[in-house]
Image 1 (cartoon, one colour):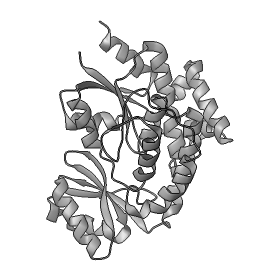
Image 2 (cartoon, one colour):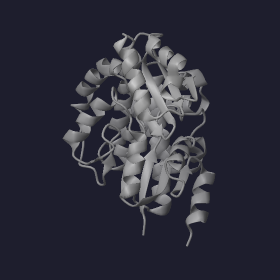
Image 3 (cartoon, rainbow, N blue to C red):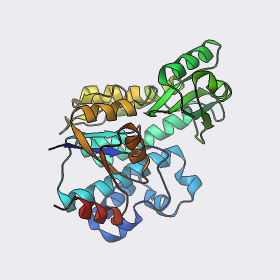
Length: 313
């Protein structure tokens, strides 16, 4: 019998209206949205359901919004199917959803923490000075070498998200990322696409945000994880609160090793991934890493019904 991993998306997966169907249909899901509003002291749910899109896209709103939608779908899924995973993992912000799923963080504490994380990330680099771009078709080592060469010339640029074979996101100064846009072919890139983001996330320029987040996380209660959580920074399992805290601080300014994390899970015998939250971003990445695994995206009431039909024995 194969193993199961629950996975949770990060920033970029958000969409106005996400979770509204389950909010309307189910008390346990509604309770999650209401708990988020109470924990933050403002009506986050209204921004999630009604937008406007510009408001939802603000990093300090996106992060608690995605966490809330992901956990609402998770709660409903658990109530309906009673399935527990063997492992959990999340992409960047999604790691906090994974930690809630593993019982490390209380949902309310997680919502407040990622709201602060979003604010710190937004404030770490003045607007317009940082950038990110998706690099398609380049090998990791070649792109790493090009980033190092550009950085030595004085414009910081680093590997931010190692998403799947042929898709790596770079992050850094505006000039550094522009150099990769212009010189990507030197690393074998077929295309380099600048991303609409408010900062150079997962680069060393985020160190001020890491330092401020450390102060917040030091005061947040954590329990040992009830199952292994695969950390972005190491692509290895972690369960102890002290290690989790340290890795969450590092994560803000370190590469997200998503491809490595999924590969490690598959090596452990995971053959079924269930993605909770808006969209199907992680499902797409996982399928590019290994076409043979089963991936379900739980992002609507309809998707829950589909899961039930497809997994009924």
